[in-house]
Length: 112
Image (tube, rainbow, N blue to C red; front, side, top):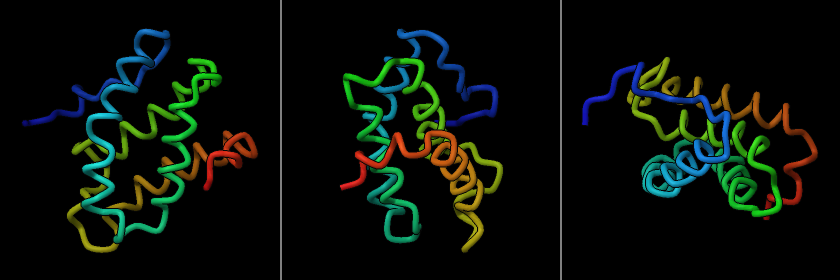
């Protein structure tokens, strides 16, 4: 599948868009983590964000932030291509780090 930057819709501003984003994460996250999980140091953070996203008690508008970051992580469109050795995941790490900082201690229960 050929992706363009315009194909990335990171605007999850309604419950229905959040639900659609959740489905996309469900379909593609584990394949990407299986492929790159050993190469990245932040796989545990991705898993915590996923658990947060799946929590039925978290309001949709809080999930929207996490879904945007997870979609960016699994998307083949990147500011820095994932194929570049060592630096290919720096942009993904940056996005995940910003979300972790923004969410703060709210995420602590989602780490196993």
